[in-house]
Image 1 (cartoon, rainbow, N blue to C red):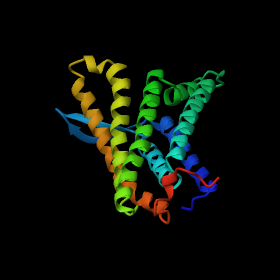
Image 2: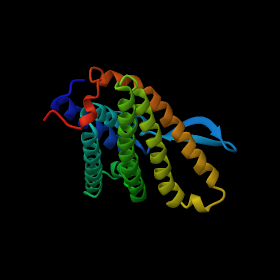
Image 3: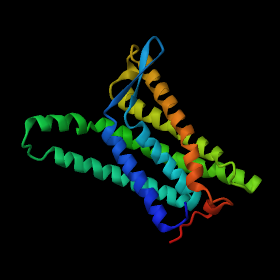
Image 4: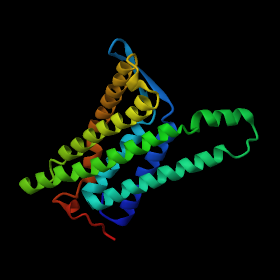
Length: 232
Protein backbone atom coordinates (compact mmCIF):
# COMPACT_ATOMS: atom_id res chain seq x y z
CA UNK A 1 0.00 0.00 0.00
CA UNK A 2 1.47 3.32 -1.08
CA UNK A 3 1.87 6.09 1.45
CA UNK A 4 -0.55 8.67 0.09
CA UNK A 5 -3.61 10.59 1.25
CA UNK A 6 -6.08 8.43 -0.68
CA UNK A 7 -4.92 5.22 0.98
CA UNK A 8 -4.91 6.87 4.40
CA UNK A 9 -8.50 7.98 3.85
CA UNK A 10 -9.44 4.46 2.73
CA UNK A 11 -7.92 2.93 5.87
CA UNK A 12 -9.80 5.41 8.06
CA UNK A 13 -13.06 4.61 6.28
CA UNK A 14 -12.54 0.87 6.76
CA UNK A 15 -11.74 1.46 10.41
CA UNK A 16 -14.82 3.57 11.19
CA UNK A 17 -17.22 1.39 9.16
CA UNK A 18 -15.94 -1.78 10.84
CA UNK A 19 -16.26 -0.15 14.26
CA UNK A 20 -19.81 1.13 13.72
CA UNK A 21 -21.02 -2.13 12.17
CA UNK A 22 -19.48 -4.12 15.02
CA UNK A 23 -21.75 -2.23 17.41
CA UNK A 24 -24.78 -2.88 15.20
CA UNK A 25 -24.25 -6.66 14.95
CA UNK A 26 -22.90 -7.28 18.45
CA UNK A 27 -26.38 -8.27 19.64
CA UNK A 28 -26.13 -11.56 17.77
CA UNK A 29 -24.47 -14.17 19.99
CA UNK A 30 -22.69 -17.06 18.28
CA UNK A 31 -23.07 -20.47 19.91
CA UNK A 32 -19.74 -22.31 19.87
CA UNK A 33 -20.65 -25.54 21.66
CA UNK A 34 -17.33 -25.29 23.53
CA UNK A 35 -17.63 -25.71 27.30
CA UNK A 36 -15.25 -24.53 30.00
CA UNK A 37 -15.48 -24.43 33.78
CA UNK A 38 -18.22 -26.82 34.86
CA UNK A 39 -19.98 -26.93 31.52
CA UNK A 40 -20.30 -23.19 30.86
CA UNK A 41 -20.80 -22.91 27.10
CA UNK A 42 -18.81 -20.14 25.44
CA UNK A 43 -20.79 -17.66 23.35
CA UNK A 44 -19.19 -15.07 21.09
CA UNK A 45 -20.48 -11.67 19.98
CA UNK A 46 -21.32 -11.27 16.30
CA UNK A 47 -19.05 -8.21 16.27
CA UNK A 48 -15.89 -10.29 16.62
CA UNK A 49 -14.70 -10.26 13.02
CA UNK A 50 -15.75 -6.66 12.34
CA UNK A 51 -14.00 -5.38 15.44
CA UNK A 52 -10.81 -7.29 14.66
CA UNK A 53 -10.51 -5.29 11.42
CA UNK A 54 -10.19 -2.06 13.44
CA UNK A 55 -6.98 -3.29 15.07
CA UNK A 56 -5.60 -4.34 11.70
CA UNK A 57 -6.30 -0.87 10.32
CA UNK A 58 -4.63 1.02 13.17
CA UNK A 59 -1.60 -1.25 12.84
CA UNK A 60 -1.40 -0.60 9.10
CA UNK A 61 -1.81 3.14 9.60
CA UNK A 62 0.79 3.14 12.36
CA UNK A 63 3.26 1.16 10.29
CA UNK A 64 2.98 3.37 7.20
CA UNK A 65 1.90 6.80 8.45
CA UNK A 66 3.05 6.71 12.06
CA UNK A 67 1.78 6.91 15.60
CA UNK A 68 0.19 10.36 15.28
CA UNK A 69 -2.10 9.27 12.44
CA UNK A 70 -3.00 6.02 14.22
CA UNK A 71 -4.09 7.93 17.33
CA UNK A 72 -6.06 10.32 15.15
CA UNK A 73 -7.88 7.34 13.63
CA UNK A 74 -8.83 6.15 17.12
CA UNK A 75 -10.37 9.57 17.84
CA UNK A 76 -12.21 9.51 14.50
CA UNK A 77 -13.59 6.13 15.48
CA UNK A 78 -14.79 7.41 18.85
CA UNK A 79 -16.56 10.33 17.19
CA UNK A 80 -18.12 8.00 14.60
CA UNK A 81 -19.27 5.58 17.28
CA UNK A 82 -20.94 8.32 19.34
CA UNK A 83 -22.55 9.89 16.25
CA UNK A 84 -23.89 6.53 15.04
CA UNK A 85 -25.38 5.86 18.48
CA UNK A 86 -27.15 9.21 18.48
CA UNK A 87 -28.59 8.58 15.01
CA UNK A 88 -29.84 5.13 16.06
CA UNK A 89 -31.51 6.55 19.17
CA UNK A 90 -33.04 9.44 17.19
CA UNK A 91 -34.51 7.07 14.60
CA UNK A 92 -35.75 4.75 17.32
CA UNK A 93 -37.78 7.53 18.91
CA UNK A 94 -39.42 8.80 15.72
CA UNK A 95 -43.12 7.87 15.27
CA UNK A 96 -43.45 4.33 13.93
CA UNK A 97 -45.84 3.40 11.11
CA UNK A 98 -45.72 -0.28 12.04
CA UNK A 99 -45.65 -1.64 15.59
CA UNK A 100 -43.99 -4.92 14.58
CA UNK A 101 -41.20 -3.14 12.76
CA UNK A 102 -40.69 -0.88 15.75
CA UNK A 103 -40.47 -3.90 18.02
CA UNK A 104 -37.89 -5.51 15.74
CA UNK A 105 -35.92 -2.25 15.63
CA UNK A 106 -35.95 -2.01 19.42
CA UNK A 107 -34.77 -5.60 19.74
CA UNK A 108 -31.93 -5.32 17.23
CA UNK A 109 -30.77 -1.73 17.61
CA UNK A 110 -32.21 -0.58 20.92
CA UNK A 111 -29.41 0.93 22.98
CA UNK A 112 -28.59 -0.47 26.38
CA UNK A 113 -26.69 2.49 27.81
CA UNK A 114 -24.64 0.32 30.14
CA UNK A 115 -23.42 -1.68 27.15
CA UNK A 116 -22.75 1.52 25.22
CA UNK A 117 -20.63 2.88 28.07
CA UNK A 118 -18.78 -0.43 28.48
CA UNK A 119 -18.13 -0.51 24.74
CA UNK A 120 -16.77 3.06 24.65
CA UNK A 121 -14.51 2.59 27.67
CA UNK A 122 -13.22 -0.73 26.35
CA UNK A 123 -12.70 0.74 22.90
CA UNK A 124 -10.71 3.78 24.01
CA UNK A 125 -8.60 1.81 26.50
CA UNK A 126 -7.76 -1.00 24.09
CA UNK A 127 -7.15 1.11 20.98
CA UNK A 128 -4.91 3.65 22.69
CA UNK A 129 -2.91 0.83 24.26
CA UNK A 130 -2.70 -0.90 20.88
CA UNK A 131 -1.18 2.18 19.23
CA UNK A 132 1.19 2.88 22.14
CA UNK A 133 2.58 -0.63 22.59
CA UNK A 134 2.78 -1.15 18.81
CA UNK A 135 5.20 1.76 18.44
CA UNK A 136 7.00 1.06 21.70
CA UNK A 137 7.95 -2.43 20.54
CA UNK A 138 8.49 -1.36 16.94
CA UNK A 139 10.88 1.47 17.80
CA UNK A 140 12.98 -0.74 20.09
CA UNK A 141 13.32 -3.57 17.59
CA UNK A 142 14.11 -1.24 14.69
CA UNK A 143 16.69 0.61 16.83
CA UNK A 144 18.50 -2.69 17.42
CA UNK A 145 18.09 -4.38 14.04
CA UNK A 146 17.53 -1.47 11.66
CA UNK A 147 14.90 -3.54 9.85
CA UNK A 148 11.12 -3.96 9.76
CA UNK A 149 11.19 -7.53 8.44
CA UNK A 150 10.02 -8.87 11.82
CA UNK A 151 7.03 -6.56 12.01
CA UNK A 152 4.80 -9.54 12.86
CA UNK A 153 6.16 -9.16 16.40
CA UNK A 154 4.74 -5.71 17.09
CA UNK A 155 1.66 -6.41 15.00
CA UNK A 156 0.70 -9.48 17.06
CA UNK A 157 1.96 -8.25 20.44
CA UNK A 158 -0.04 -5.02 20.23
CA UNK A 159 -3.27 -6.63 19.04
CA UNK A 160 -3.15 -9.61 21.38
CA UNK A 161 -2.51 -7.52 24.49
CA UNK A 162 -5.03 -4.82 23.56
CA UNK A 163 -7.70 -7.49 23.10
CA UNK A 164 -7.15 -8.56 26.71
CA UNK A 165 -7.95 -5.01 27.81
CA UNK A 166 -10.99 -4.74 25.56
CA UNK A 167 -12.40 -8.10 26.66
CA UNK A 168 -11.88 -7.60 30.40
CA UNK A 169 -13.10 -3.98 30.43
CA UNK A 170 -16.22 -4.53 28.32
CA UNK A 171 -17.38 -7.77 29.97
CA UNK A 172 -16.33 -6.53 33.40
CA UNK A 173 -18.39 -3.34 33.14
CA UNK A 174 -21.38 -4.72 31.20
CA UNK A 175 -21.81 -8.03 32.97
CA UNK A 176 -19.60 -7.93 36.04
CA UNK A 177 -20.83 -4.57 37.33
CA UNK A 178 -23.98 -3.95 35.31
CA UNK A 179 -25.54 -7.34 35.89
CA UNK A 180 -23.84 -7.73 39.27
CA UNK A 181 -22.02 -10.94 38.31
CA UNK A 182 -18.92 -9.84 40.24
CA UNK A 183 -20.99 -9.93 43.42
CA UNK A 184 -22.83 -13.19 42.72
CA UNK A 185 -20.81 -16.25 43.61
CA UNK A 186 -22.81 -18.39 41.19
CA UNK A 187 -22.07 -16.09 38.23
CA UNK A 188 -18.34 -15.54 38.66
CA UNK A 189 -17.41 -18.74 36.82
CA UNK A 190 -19.70 -17.93 33.82
CA UNK A 191 -18.21 -14.42 33.81
CA UNK A 192 -14.67 -15.81 33.72
CA UNK A 193 -15.56 -18.35 31.04
CA UNK A 194 -17.05 -15.56 28.91
CA UNK A 195 -13.84 -13.52 29.19
CA UNK A 196 -11.57 -16.48 28.42
CA UNK A 197 -13.71 -17.79 25.56
CA UNK A 198 -14.01 -14.41 23.86
CA UNK A 199 -10.32 -13.66 24.29
CA UNK A 200 -9.25 -16.98 22.75
CA UNK A 201 -11.46 -16.18 19.75
CA UNK A 202 -9.90 -12.70 19.45
CA UNK A 203 -6.41 -14.17 19.88
CA UNK A 204 -6.98 -16.51 16.94
CA UNK A 205 -8.29 -13.64 14.81
CA UNK A 206 -5.18 -11.63 15.65
CA UNK A 207 -2.96 -14.40 14.26
CA UNK A 208 -5.07 -14.62 11.11
CA UNK A 209 -4.68 -10.91 10.34
CA UNK A 210 -0.85 -11.11 10.20
CA UNK A 211 -0.64 -12.05 6.47
CA UNK A 212 -3.00 -9.17 5.67
CA UNK A 213 -0.82 -6.81 7.70
CA UNK A 214 2.25 -7.87 5.69
CA UNK A 215 0.35 -7.59 2.43
CA UNK A 216 -0.91 -4.08 3.16
CA UNK A 217 2.41 -2.78 4.48
CA UNK A 218 4.71 -4.33 1.89
CA UNK A 219 7.00 -1.85 0.20
CA UNK A 220 7.03 0.31 3.31
CA UNK A 221 10.06 -1.21 5.02
CA UNK A 222 13.06 0.63 6.32
CA UNK A 223 11.15 2.52 8.97
CA UNK A 224 9.01 4.79 6.79
CA UNK A 225 6.39 5.01 9.51
CA UNK A 226 8.83 6.01 12.24
CA UNK A 227 8.54 9.74 11.86
CA UNK A 228 4.78 9.73 12.33
CA UNK A 229 4.13 12.04 9.39
CA UNK A 230 1.68 11.74 6.55
CA UNK A 231 2.12 12.70 2.92
CA UNK A 232 -0.15 15.71 3.26
